[in-house]
Image (tube, rainbow, N blue to C red; front, side, top):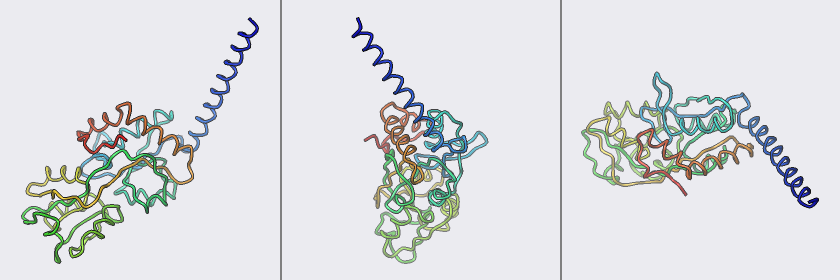
Length: 265
């Protein structure tokens, strides 16, 4: 009987240590990941939502990062606040200013020096959309002197497009809205962007054509500011679990996105 009492007391003590440890971790996490009392989620807003881009309406924001941000804030136990940006580069620039706590954005080697990335959750082909009225059947025909290709300033796509195209001119613009308006008005020949976004644009701007070829893969991942180890551990666990429990699939469905780009590994 004494042995069983000792075993029961030992188990109880271990449970208490675990609870206290988890409570301490939760308190430390909340202080690190939500120092303002809210989880500030950086989002980029454009004309069409998706795995990275979000849209804004009178009812608020929509997009996969919005769904993930809400669920993440609920787990931390704080309200969510969406911090709007015109593009992914603006999110990167704000990382050092601690203007946000969590972001979801395309990653590359340069950005990994400015923030800490967790798991990739979306991997999509990147290509070009051709303006209405311009007969360009493939990338080779696009890559000719005199053709102007638009991209969003200082993004992973812009850097790759400049390295890929040898003759065409790649011009950077501030926001998604700006390149969308230029393409719609026929003032630029093409836009470089992720295929899922370009397919949405093609539905909205009659006569445009998305090329079948691909010039890069764009991987979108969760990120936190540098030197936030508890935050990184938490968002890594969150995305890993979201792939397994269906939360990511639900977020894609809520935004009418194909699961073909969803990265579940």
